[in-house]
Length: 288
Image 1: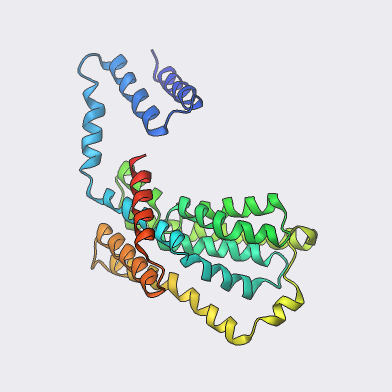
Image 2 (image 1 turned 120 degrees about the vertical axis):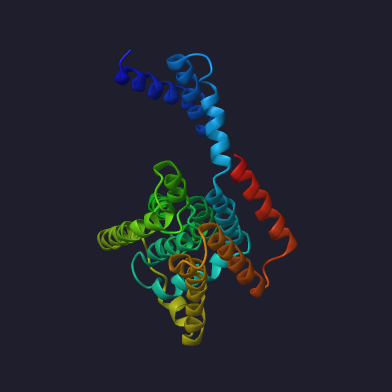
């Protein structure tokens, strides 16, 4: 059997099993082990177990639970609420301003934990109700949240790039640096689309009312502007020591998790219930 036919059979088997609702990692592992047995015969099934043990011994893999935990702390401790309020106040008068603020919020969330699922969770719980309440088009809202949350794949510290570094055997730091410019370019294109669509069809992205804008004092605007310091501080505390070579990848993820927890404690939002929920959800994500 030719290599092309083997590849076609493996790929079609994966698609067929995924269509039945099986987990992706289980489908890939099953097809790989079964193909190895058919190609190389008895004893080749050990290749799958060897790969699993090798993966479990990969030290940088410890970054995944740390980044997942950071994302859930951001969501459960409502640290993103102040950020969204800041974008709401400063961009609300612009057509499509809240949608633009949502994309910028996703950029900051991605820079803090590098996890798309965290951006999706925060967008669905914080941005979605507010945008719908203010008369934004449903398709526009869902598209903005999904597009913005996808930025976590590129903007460092990206969890996906950590996994890709394992497969491609490339330095994680260089992959992170390579993802910065494309991630910011995508965010800029998303914002440009919202601005153009808002100009052409203003009813899809209505701005906040003049009365509401007048009710927000300059002092309140400046106070909310300070909320933007939080993601920058977390990003600096986590990335600068890593890029400078003072900490390893795993150590930087721990620093980021501790910094996020410290921010939640300072805001008096890190309760035992929040800690229990974040820990449980992080373990569930990493197990699944």
